[in-house]
Image (cartoon, rainbow, N blue to C red; front, side):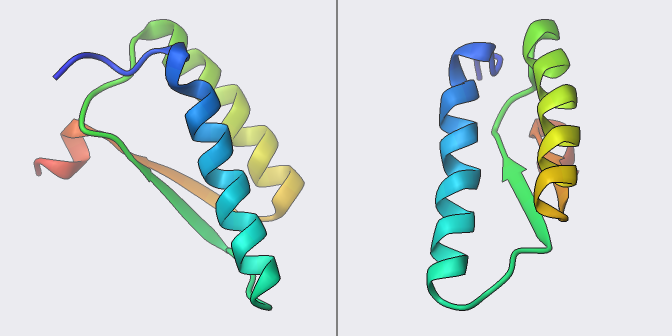
Length: 74
């Protein structure tokens, strides 16, 4: 499986935004959001992820986890 790169960052941002929007539209609140990807992130993507994750957790008051190939295969 190819590595996840920063080229997928827009998809990741949209995924969280769509989840938050759908939850709000239905009167729900997301407290935990898990991103599942079938590969590992390359260095630049991992660096982007770490910063983005912290900002989103603070902005939306939720916990964000990453389940990559290592977590999913264990």
